[in-house]
Length: 201
Length: 299
Image (cartoon, rainbow over all chains, first blue to last red; front, top):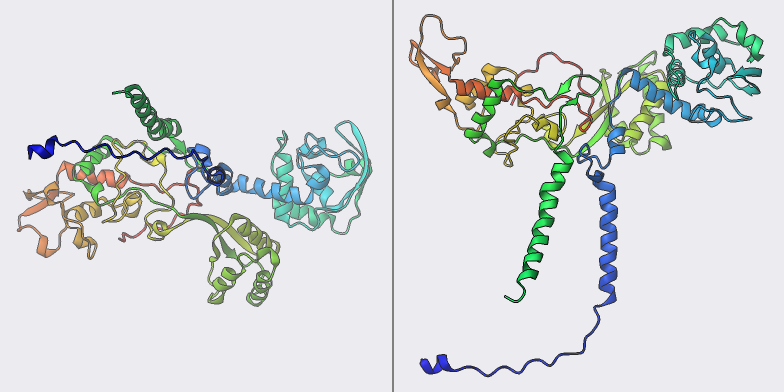
C-alpha cells in the first residue's frame, strides 16, 4: 500500500508544441455577420428601451399608428390624409404654398376668416384670376379639386387646414359643406379678387 | 494564488455587467413610472386603492393566490376591426355586388380572402365586423372605400391573442397597472385564470365573497380550494347581516346561524374588485367597447 502511494509516476512526455496556426478567417466573418443581424433585429424590435413600447409593438412609430382616434383627432387625421393626397401636391404638405403653383394656406387670410363660406366655395368651384394672399398677388388657376370629395372628407380637409401649421380657426362641418355644394351647383370658377370678395363671408 | 487580482477583476466585470443589465437598465427604463392619463380622456390611471383594498393585497399575498393565478394579460398582436355600422341608402343587392368588386381590387388583395369569408354567411344584421385584426393600412383603405360608397363604417383598434380571446382582458398588462402594488403579485403559473381584470369581469362583491367561500358553487368544475377560514359562523341576531353569504342548502349553516366574512375576506374582495385593467392607455391602445349593459358574471 505504502509502496503504491509513495510511487510517483514519471512525468508523461509532454506534447511538443505544434506550430501556431491562425484562427480561421471564416469564424471571424461569421461572427461579424451574426452581430450585424442581431443589431438589425434589435433595431427593428427593441423599441430602443422606450418604456412605452411593449410586444407586439416594435417601435414608437408603430405604437402611434394604432392609437384609436376619437372626435376631433379622427377628423384631423382624415383631413391630413386627404389633404396630402389631393391638395398637398400644389399647396405643399406644410401648407406654405409653392411659387408659380399655389399660394400658401398657412396664415392665409382667406383660410382664417371667421365665416367659412368663401373658403368652402374655392375647392368646390375652383378659383382663377388674380387673388391677394398675405400681401402678395397670385395670378393662377385652381380647378374644382374638392368637387369630387365627399362632404365629410372636404369638411375634414378644411378643418385640417384651418387648424394646422399655426392656423387657429374653428372647424368646418359636413353640413356646411353640403349646403355650400348645393348653393354652387353648376357655377363656374370664382374669377378674381372682386368675385371672391363679393361672396358672403 | 498567482492570478488573484485578475480573477477579482473578471468577477467584478461579470457581476457588474449583469447588474447593469438586470438592475440598472430596468430602473432607468421603468423606475420613473407614474400615473398616466387614459386615452382620449383626462382621467388619471391607475387610481390609488383605498386602505381597505390596499390591505387586501397583503391578504392576497399571505394566502398565496399568486401561486395559482397570474395577474398579467399577454397580447400577441394588434389589429384593426372594420365594423359596418350603417348601409346609408344602399340596397342589400347593390351592397353585395359592391363588396364583391372590392374583393377584386388590387389595393385590398391582402384582406380580400377574409373579407369574402366574413360576408359569405352574413344575414344582414348590423353592426357587422367586415375585417378582424387587419393591418392598419388595409383597414384604412377599406374604410375609405366604404365611406366613398356612402356606407357607414368604423375602424376599431383591437388586441388579439389567446388571453384576449379568453376574455381575460382587453389589452396587455403594462407597468402602470402595477404602480400601487407593493409587492407586485405577477404570478407565473396559471392553474386558475388570470386576475389582471377580475374586478371588471366580476364586479359584484357578493359574488367574490361567495366564490372565496365555495368556488364550486359559482364556477362549475373549479379546482380552487375554498378559503373558509376567511369567514366565520355567527348566531343570527335579529335581521341577517347584510353581507351574510347566501349558500345553497348543502352548505348552509344550521338554522339560527349565518356565515359572514371576516375583515380579511372583505379586504381581499375589495382588492380583487380593484383589479380593473380595462382602460386604453398610450402604451396599450385599443378602442374601448361602447358602454354595454352590466356584464353578467361568467367564468
